[in-house]
Structure formats: structure tokens, C-alpha cells
Length: 125
Image (cartoon, rainbow, N blue to C red; front, side, top):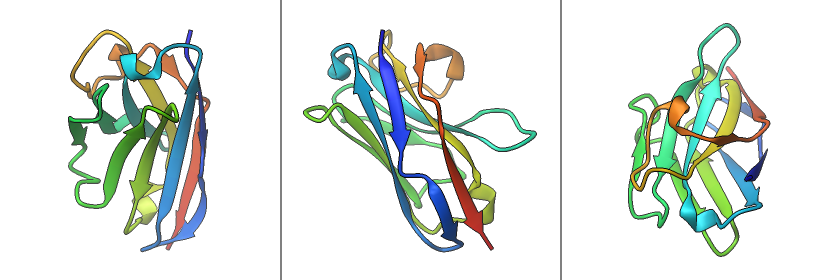
């Protein structure tokens, strides 16, 4: 069992920045690829960014490319999402997730075994 706890969400003006953190506990963190997903009201959960176990491979959605950066610190059992140049359409609940089966980061929610409770990000125009 892996427990994931997100933090760092909040209200920010368009063009601003936020850094989300996701702290993991329960199993060896470096054995899991990690990802961030988001879900806006009335919409399906969508992929944001993912990172491999070692942190050497990352991938992100086209909608956030060049603005968001995923990283991890295996010594701190934490994955981060640095979000810059935020837009109102980035408003959503952001979830981190852990995948213990694949070496490469996946964009598919069904590949992730563990999920955090989510943190709200609201971008005001």
C-alpha cells in the first residue's frame, strides 16, 4: 500500500505560479513511476505529467508543455509539479498517482494503482 498526500494548491492569478508536492509513504518510493492528473468540474480526469522511477524520463500533456515541470526527490519520497504561466483553464483538482508496474511513465489513469486525495488549483482571470 502506498499513501499519497498532495499539497500546494490554492488560488492564483492568471500568469502566476504554484508548486504542488505529493508526499508518499508506505512502500519504496523509487519503485514507482509517478504522475499528475487533473479533473475540472464536469470533465473527465486528464493526464498532466509523469516521471519515471529514477526521474530520468518525463512526459507531459501538450496543454502544459513549456509551462509545467514534473520532478521528484527519491530521498524525500516526494514528487513535484512546478506550474508557471497559469491559465484559468488550468483550474482543476490535481491528483498524484503511483504506478508500480511500468518502468516508463504512462499517460493512462488505469495504469496507476494508488492515488492521492487531490488538491484544488484555482486560477483567476
